[in-house]
Amino acid sequence: MAEAIRITGLNEFVRGLKQLDNELPKVLRVAFNKSAETIVAEARAGVPSRTGAAKGSVKARSTQREVRIVGGSKKVPYYPWLDFGGRVGKARSISRPFLKDGRYIYAAYFKHRDQLAGFLEVALIDAARSAGVEVD
Image (tube, rainbow, N blue to C red; front, side):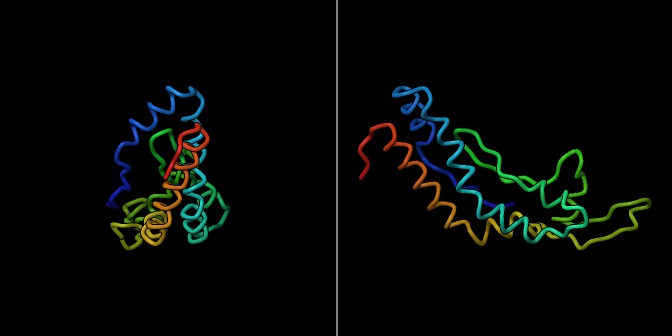
């Protein structure tokens, strides 16, 4: 499994923003989604498509403290099989080579991890500046 990007002091930062203005931490959620767009776009581009449902299920979801990129849904329960492989079907007859790190989301994450960290840093600095906090 991939190593997550951890931001030391993020919880304290969010609490500080809330003290300045209760609406400011909401800006982080939008900024986190925007920072993940590169990974989402690359992952979607690699997903095979018959109807487009699997491609469309790759999305960024975030809170004020984290961003996740997910694939699949109730309508696309086969997405994990597309990404990671394995055996499905009656008697497990349909096989796809298993890849621990997947084919699409994690591959895009590993490729753009440093870029994502840079986007997250810029998002946090912009949030601080919008709160009127001086940033070096």
